[in-house]
Image 1 (spheres, one colour):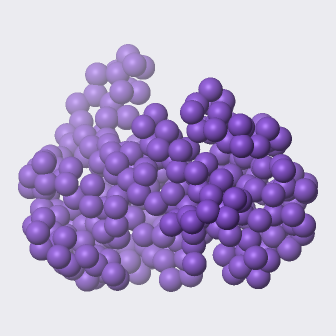
Image 2 (spheres, rainbow, N blue to C red):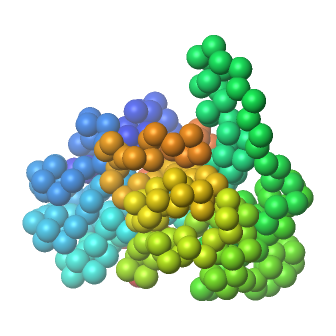
Length: 316
């Protein structure tokens, strides 16, 4: 048996309980040593003869899957499966699983951190102070402001709880809204249009698919409150970055916090030169606690699928 392992944080911690468990199950592990997600050509080469695949943010396309000969199971190290061609996997009889919910606290905390950073311009002030300047910058308080959450899943629910602790008003749009949860936690059920018009801060927590690609486009940005802050810790394709740059430079948007980009890593983006933009390298799930939980579940999922045991996290 042979297994390809590509998540960078998992590969770096070979002393972890999860890594040791996987290595005991299958000593023949092929590790990703590039430090980045793999593209089609690299995957086709490395998956040759592999029975299992513990996958990070790699591009697992139909081209990749049609050229595999032995692959039986893909265990996604994370919740998102937008970079996996699920239909192509089904046609090949390859099982695909994910690790939903285990990184929800970590991602919600980063989203909240980006909110605070933009409200008080913390990164800009840190840089200027270290450069010998003594800048007087007037920020905004988030207490009493309205947070609009787009996607009230596990991450959105944690973010709502954090916001409540800061005396924020919380509204949420979700096409499959958990109404009972919203009612029990004083979260206002809202339409997408209401969130755009009324929220001071908007945070995105939807999966990326055909319907959500460029969910925040020029039309949506034209409808947001003047000076609003937008946070995206989900997937880069959710926001039209060119349109966001235009809204920021025109003063329509007050700030933008991104942990995900259409191209990763981003190359020479005009967003780099703006003080009201805070960017992080798709690191929302990278806490010690989240990595441990993701590692444990991803390994258990893969072993269960390869041994024919029940796996509750298979993508149907």
